[in-house]
Image 1 (tube, rainbow, N blue to C red):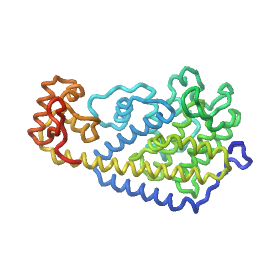
Image 2: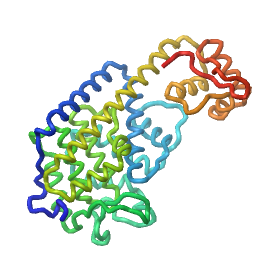
Image 3: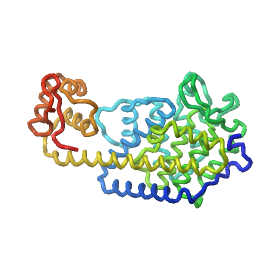
Image 4: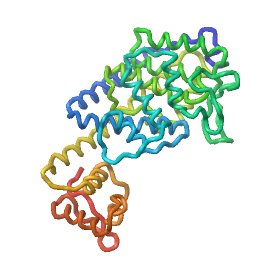
Length: 367
């Protein structure tokens, strides 16, 4: 028997004594991060938010096994934020739709959740009306032809069934109850409410596809409301993706137990704590980057040089060689060498310890 079949469903309960200290720690981390971000300039705040939202969109889809083009996602988000990132890669309408959902959830967190709003999200998420090769109902609750809705993970042919959702004929009543609760003012902390909302929505699984991504958008919506801020500086979806195995394990455990969801909430809060701490580490990198450009603001550099320096500041993979420079910047080897020698003369770059064919280049400034 699944929890949605229990007599008292969906009257969840939990042990506050086991949650108080963890919830307080998460709330402190939220406040600390927002405080640090408020001390940064508008430009750095936007840069951090762009990076966070890009990661959030990519990782939320990755949990479902869908790999999105990072440059298209970044371009779509930058366009929505009004940020000029130079040459952009046009995003397809599927990616634009996912970005629209994220922006509506986090920027308009104060707006009420409605059935039609969820339908619009679903239509934006699946603009072709298909899930893989199969035609599905879009912009509506799943129908009878969807069959028994099983929540699974793993590769095709080796799927693990975690639980079965309520049947299609119960969805109107189930979602009316959920939406009313979601919009209500309760005495529960909004961070706690976000953990409940995620579990509750995913349990109902009202759509033929896309439930996980919409459920995580609802989570972000309540987290934005808990901070009274539409700017996102940490990615819950990214942390869930890192802990994907336990994410599905905890969902499965919660479905087959009682309506006491204390263990699920503890896992959720711990995941959120890790997400915020990861963002703190990323913030240190952003501050180093800002300091670097502040110290070199009077040095004349071209667009190619700026592109490579930003890549080095963001953690360039492998060793930077003149050949890689030429490929990345789509220029000749001679142009790459001139760019590099110019930065060496300006003491921005230095030659790595190994020479000859292994000649590579590093930032002179330690980060």
